[in-house]
Image (tube, rainbow, N blue to C red; front, side, top):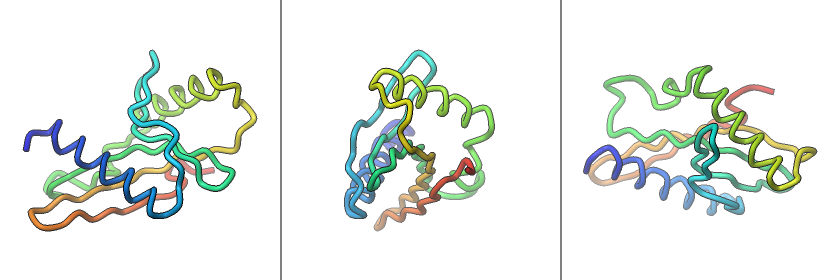
Length: 118
């Protein structure tokens, strides 16, 4: 499995995981000129912008460590594009990171809610 396949498998697993938790998936792979958001979902009355990071091992660090301040800013700017396009500028929202760990025989998710802080 190449890195694109790993990423796609992780995003599919993340969307399924969120669905099982009762989230309603609004969009996947949302693109704007500022970047891409892996999953946009609704959790009760809150819009959730989810960055999915998938790894087969932690040899190079934990997945969430790849979401540095620069990456966070890109995600925030892309979320603002989404909110403006949909006329949702007053919507309650948050930013989550969903770490997906793939192994030969299992898939494990670690959901970091409100990962960018308040």
